[in-house]
Amino acid sequence: MLAIGEFSRLTHLSVRTLRRYHDAGLLVPATVDEATGYRYYSADQIPEAQVIHRLRELDVPLPEVQRILRAADPGARADLVSGHLGRLEAELARTRAAVASLRRLLSPEPAPVHVELRSVPETTVAAVEDEVAHGDVLAWYAGAMAELDATVTEPGGPPGGLYDNALFEVCRGWATVYVPTTRPPRVGRVRPSTLPAVELAVATHVGEHDDIDVTYGEVGSWVVANALAVAGPVRETYLVGPRDTADPSAWRTEIGWPVFQVAP
Image (cartoon, rainbow, N blue to C red; front, side, top):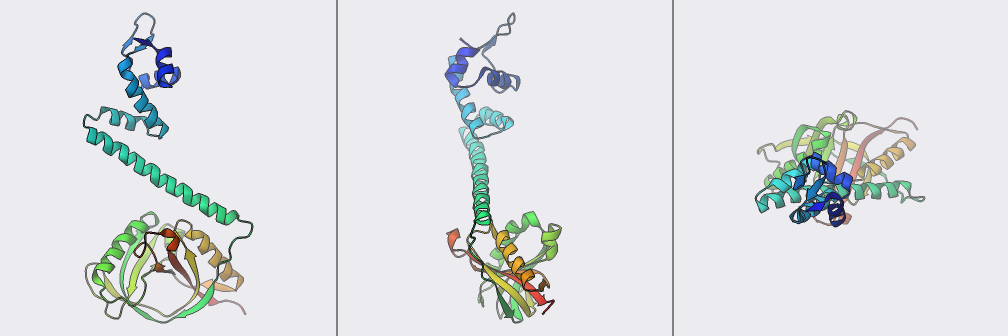
């Protein structure tokens, strides 16, 4: 048997941590002296302690560690670990995106965003429309675009989206994803629609969409500086996107703010 201090040195888990794991029922000593309360561990418990150590280094919560250790099937264990690793990778991607956005915002000489005014004529489209929560937009967009891709056989241009102001202001509002076409079908959620003619202040966002809010802000600043006001839902046009290439650096998204002049 190994005293708790010896076991600590062998596993690189502090005595305090071992006691906490014991109290949580995660790593129970092989025996506890009833008279002294001293904890003793067996050499067979070293691999288990090492597994726990690695899982905690990956920030796996204690209840999840218990589930992994208690899973009798190796496949079930692998699935639990893979699920947590997937969440870590997603969090890492969000962190990297946030860092890139901060560097862009804090750059002493940020690259200027070119904004232009554009008159867009009335356009016939095939569209999917629904009221969506802000946090569900990406999943909803993916499903809606898949339906459009499956039903629109003669697209007349790149796909786009209309996003109601309420979606940004109160985190829930109407969203429309569409594909221009002269022959819009009526299948499933896909319906014919007509987008009205509009004046847009347009800029192109380059790359991933994680920091698209930065480009939104730059367009908004340009609109204010040029004495213009927003006059309707924001339009996005997906010139190049995930449907076209897996390389995010190649993505190009046009942001169009419907505007009208409020002063000379």
